[in-house]
Length: 379
Image: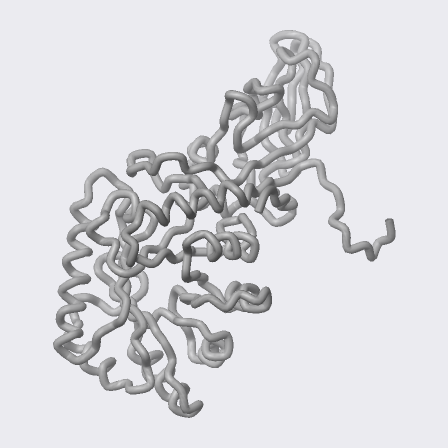
């Protein structure tokens, strides 16, 4: 095979993306929602590692009607792939970005008067309207107009005649915890702002505030649109949030054993010699590490081999990690291992790995690097 071949180069570690499971999850989430509530799929950061184009196509054919991204490049990737669905652009823009927002036919979030004015002037110069989603800060304190000062900015926004207020939104700071006090306070603040805006003659067509945690636990906040990302991947945002029946994990991380070392009692493994064999041992090497997004841990965690948990030993390195195969004498080089996902009756979840990494599932999933090939299964 020549160096210019378009075929993917082989690698003995990879991520499998089950598009059939993703489709199933969207159908399940869609069935959970009121008929008139739209489902928006958040595909930022390459659909949390799944691959934005493939995941977006499944979503739009399985109940989602809108998409959302954070960067212009993410939006351009979708448009270049022929995706024409409405795309919400999260975050705030600077003025040099505004022409791209229009040329890509995006619906930006709007949270600053200066940018609202700039969008209005740009739209007027092109003889068109621009659809925007008004972002209201009800307690997240990141992006958006403050709920406290709606009487100041509301009338000014209403005067921008070239802005089409396609939506108004807020974002929960704590929707997936057991205590919903803050979330319900944000719901109240949001509705109060909307009531005030309507009095000023500004009536957004769609209202939305639910993320995945809200979809699970706050049905009173569904409104016109809900926004899901992680949930569609069969992963829950916390250990204590609600559950939907029969959601399926979409992403599996796999590798093949590429080497086996035979140790005698007293031999050590890895940098710093952090693990010492207490018996004659067989150590398997898997060719992925923290350079691929696996947690940089020592003597913690497992891989699944032959449907059995094999302990990780020594420290995870940039490109490799080691597992104890002593109790699996038939395991040889080429054996398939699962680092995240199910094998037989055993499963290692994204939540399991995020606890090892001392982070949240969002960080764990988006942390899988692109040097791990994505292999798509199903459709």
